[in-house]
Length: 124
Image 1: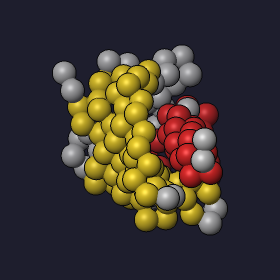
Image 2: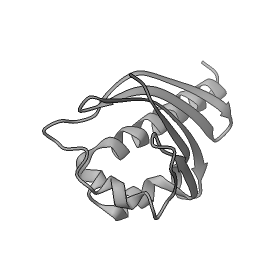
Image 3: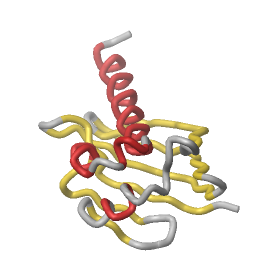
Image 4: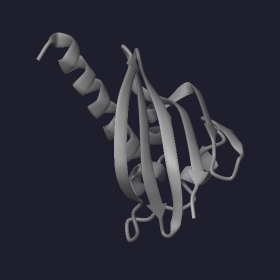
């Protein structure tokens, strides 16, 4: 395995780890932890069609919609390194019957891997 391959594997794992942390109810309940994982230029197009930024999304991450009793079920996780320091994730999420295809772009910053963009699309 080349150094480039090792870096790609590490990048993908960092993005997956960050994504799963953002789905963790304990992390979501702490705005400081959420903001550590979101890029200052973060934007999201939510499953509702609403546009969010790093500050406005805090109103939903801490609202209790994800609980330890009923965690988000994640499947079909797939990752692609788009360029050095940029990872695209796609996956399927089921949050208490609210099912969505999700897509995130993670980028490496001076402070670590951060989510730059996220989109969710509801599915029947």
